[in-house]
Image 1 (cartoon, rainbow, N blue to C red):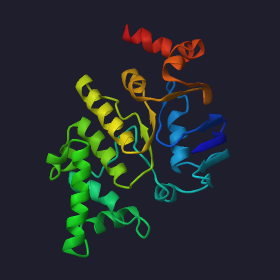
Image 2 (tube, rainbow, N blue to C red; image 1 turned 90 degrees about the vertical axis):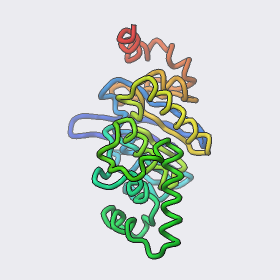
Image 3 (tube, helix red, strand yellow; image 1 turned 180 degrees about the vertical axis):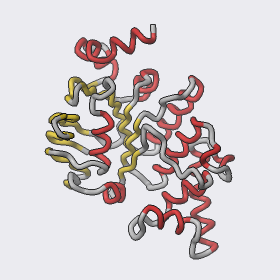
Image 4 (cartoon, rainbow, N blue to C red; image 1 turned 135 degrees about the vertical axis):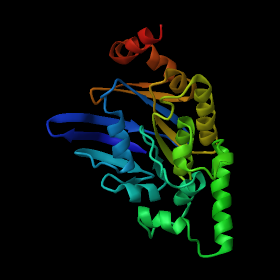
Length: 256
């Protein structure tokens, strides 16, 4: 994926300003910056949740700038959210099943109904086995029959990742997947992200937890007031004076 001059304005506010970036297949690329830097806006644009004010988004040689969220997902791009979004009144397994059914002919609520009413026992078995495999992959397989609203917070984060993986993405956009987690949960989340990438999925991740972002990223991109101010090897970016002044200085002081 690459962007050219990607810009998004909200009235008089320029949330993202002329951003060029590229994501190579198989990479884990981290996105950092202060609150309000435009990070989630960028994810929203890449996923089709928002349309840019100007600029271009190209994925696998195709201009996807004006495609909607549903159509972007069909191309193999999935995302999670900073505030977890799951179907709270469905079971853990049913949540993942909604991502496994055919999205080409059905709207989001049709997916929920269809996922619970398969056309045959064979189809039902195949879909449930697929959902179980994804739940096991993120380490919450034994909770498959629990309502999603009853899961511990850290496990709802994993459930959302499993739901995103159910769509079969080649590019996964993660919006702060480690926020609110304790140190042990952080280690588990790092392991899951590494496994996802190890299976061939490109990962673009927003994260404030430096242990996570430094531990897994092949490259870092830094946004500040909507502009890209740095990009490169994680260690080099971490020591960039401009980045320290804009963002990491306060992070380091907070952790000292």
